[in-house]
Length: 176
Image (tube, rainbow, N blue to C red; front, side, top):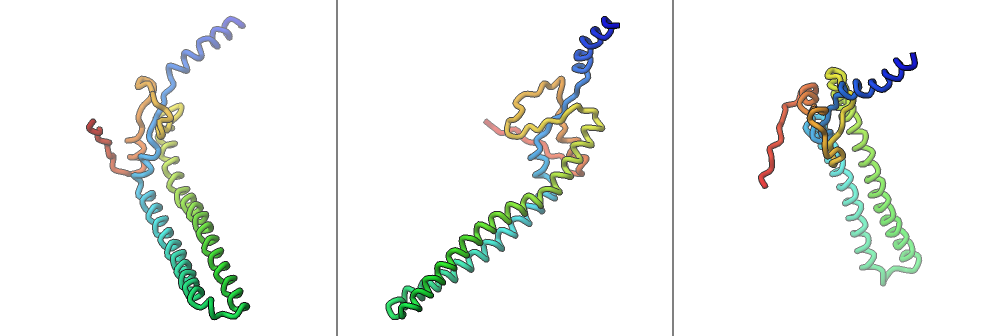
């Protein structure tokens, strides 16, 4: 009994390695071709414009009040001078705080917008992986997997794009 078990344990890695099938794709390449990605990027750009317009409006108000302050500072009594300086300081701090908050909100909005897009892509990758019987699917972005043995791995970009209903765009080689 021990011999049979030992033999099975020795043969198991050989059997498993012969059956392991890996898939790979560039996650970013497929993601960027999804219409939902383009829509999310457009929504984010629109939001950036709105925040920038509001920040500019606040800066213009600060500039106007600062100019008025510079013109009238010689004639202001001490208490008005102090009041206007405090007002300018508050406007400047508000502008800085708004820009910081806007950046945080944009980061959060990007994360929220992309969550659904990434979930859809992940579902398609999972479906292709299950249908084709892959043991794992590797993301080749950022040169994270510089070599995949063609005998053990298959490029699943086209099947994932079909699953998403996207046109399959092949990359053209760059002229050297």
